[in-house]
Image 1 (cartoon, one colour):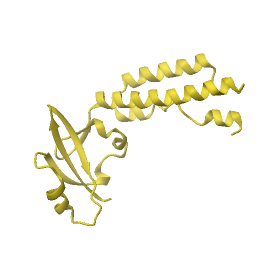
Image 2 (cartoon, rainbow, N blue to C red; image 1 turned 45 degrees about the horizontal axis):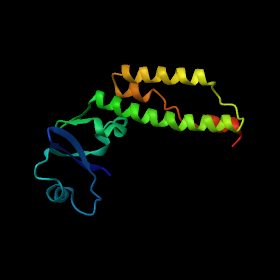
Image 3 (tube, rainbow, N blue to C red; image 1 turned 120 degrees about the vertical axis):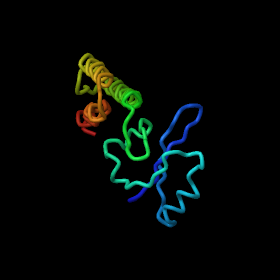
Length: 149
C-alpha cells in the first residue's frame, strides 16, 4: 500500500476525512475517478507513508486540507477517553474475577482507581497525539503473570 486517496465529504455541516486504499489491480487514477464521490472535496493521491504513524489510530480526528493531515485534538481526546474507558472496564472485570478466585491483583483497588483518575485527567490535559499515546491503556497482561496463566 504505497499510495492512497484522501478526500473530504460534508454531511449536515460535518466534514469527515475518508481514506481510499486501492488494491493495485486498477490504476489509482481510475479508482479516483470511479470510486470517489463527485461531491468530495480536497481529493488527493498521497503516499501512505507520508501520513504520520501516530495519526493512524486517530482517523476520526483527522482534518484534511488537501495537502496535509492535522488532528482535531478535541476529537482525538474524546476518542482516546472512550478507548481508555473500554480498556478500564475490561481490567475492572478481570480484577473482579481475580478477587472472586482469591488471586491477588498487582495493584490494590485504591492505587488502581487513583491511576485511572490521574490518567483521565492527563487525557483531558493532553495537547498533542504524543501526549495521548504516552498514557498507557489500563488493560494489561500484568495480572496474568500474577496468576501464573
